[in-house]
Image 1 (cartoon, rainbow, N blue to C red):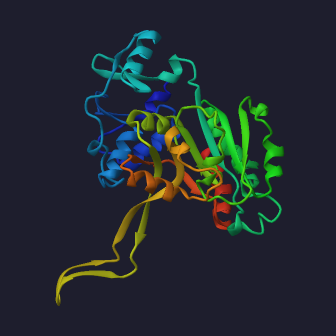
Image 2 (cartoon, rainbow, N blue to C red; image 1 turned 90 degrees about the vertical axis):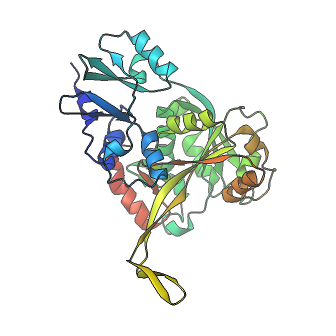
Image 3 (tube, helix red, strand yellow; image 1 turned 180 degrees about the vertical axis):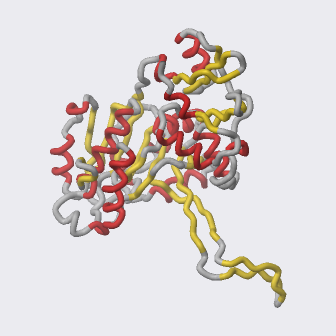
Length: 350
């Protein structure tokens, strides 16, 4: 009997970081919080972790601070049809199995149903010059640089394919023929690939205006072609669809330590002192989900960057949400990032 589900168990006193490690290395997409008798106390999903991050809960805090205390569960012996129905009606992808009030197993929707397929278009931005990576990009576009034995862009493409996506658009500008020749029409991977060629640089969002008029009326996932990540694209799309917003931006937590003691005062009076405090920000991770209306709002052959496009939506009182990602993420923008990616990719199993 497969006992791999035991790796999803965690005690309420272990840290959120330990829960993240389980989510990032196992396929369950669920962590089970249990007591010493293996009774189920709660569950943790990446959504619980993201909500904890937004509440400024430290990743070194105990998992009991963020766990969901009323989880859906199923009795041992339930049929695959019953398990699939229970998971689908509750919009969950994993469910613990219980016998005599104790956890005796964990099953996933993927294991009891066929793989999900997504008709949503995926737009990969691969037109940049890669200036900061010179001389590596003197004779190759950055997305074709090899990391772990294959081009960065191929690793991205395969990540989407494994998640069930089949329809791809790739924007090209710098050395476009090299990218077109390598990826072709996508038949090599049993997917569809079309190319959007910019005649001049249109910024980080302008290529959206060049997408075909017959584009699917489904939300589009847009991603920079120089990012190495194992973010859950299905979970991202589900999050966007559940909230029905104009756009969703993936964000990363970024910490900056002030190199000096910070003084807070009132007039000449010192109220408090903090030595080299750490400030935390959310930064753009270069991955977005855009509604069809958002895409249609981009004029043809008009230079515009994503921050300006999203700010325009906010000015119109359209809702733009952020999706915090705790998974591995690396923007391969500089030579040292490229070197780091070479070391990381084997360890992470992309």
